[in-house]
Image 1 (spheres, rainbow, N blue to C red):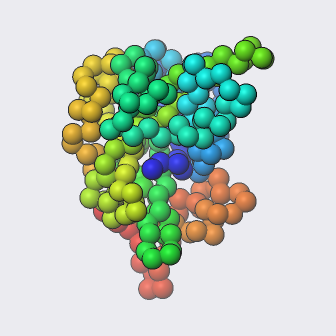
Image 2 (cartoon, rainbow, N blue to C red; image 1 turned 60 degrees about the horizontal axis):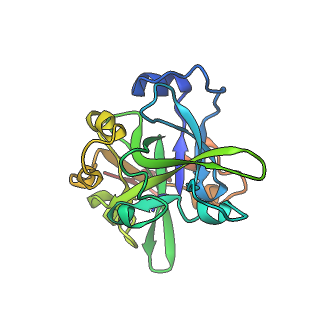
Amino acid sequence: MCYSNSSTSSNETLGKFYQRETGALPSYEPTFYANGFTFPIWRIITHEPHIKRMQWGLIPSWFSGANPINIASKTLNARIETLTEKASFQRLVSTQRCIVPSSGFFEFQHKGVEKIPYFIYPIDTPLFSMAGLYDEWLNRETGEIIQSFTIITTIANPLMEDIHNHKKRMPLILDQSQIQAYLLGEGNINGYSSQPYEAMQAHKVDKQVLFSQTPNIPAVQHPIVDNIGQQTLLF
């Protein structure tokens, strides 16, 4: 699943790439590593003309519990196969789709008891356009309105089968040509996963940096160099 992500593009780059307005966005510092379980704020693309900011970890509009984090921790991802079966997502499939821009994401390969971290990133484009869903929740105690999102996951392509060899999943990533139709709610959402996205490559990263107290630094994405000076790169 996709629980660790990055977003290093400037507001200007996102605006040009998605043809969206950025004037209302605050200044942005690159996010080299973000753990979804910290519920970070992300720049999100919807059908609206401006880029929005939302919390990762979807809080359904109907949620009435005391602690929204309890449900947000369970909705960082949404399996495409069961979207219409889950109460948190079924209302959103046609009308509240979004794109989660990503500079690359992190995943673990299992070899016995060892977990080997990889950074997976685009080849032919500056960004992954991850398909997502979003919702808006009103905290009735404080009056705060929280917009939040989930990242849709699908079956892995061959590269991700090798890396994410435990569950063999990956984010649902769209081609540039699919984005507009997706955001407008066109087509059966399962159809967007019929051809797995493959324009990506990956390399191993340093586990000590990833698991440090301050992983949000450029080095978290740097490839490990082996004993003979070669980068561990997967295509």
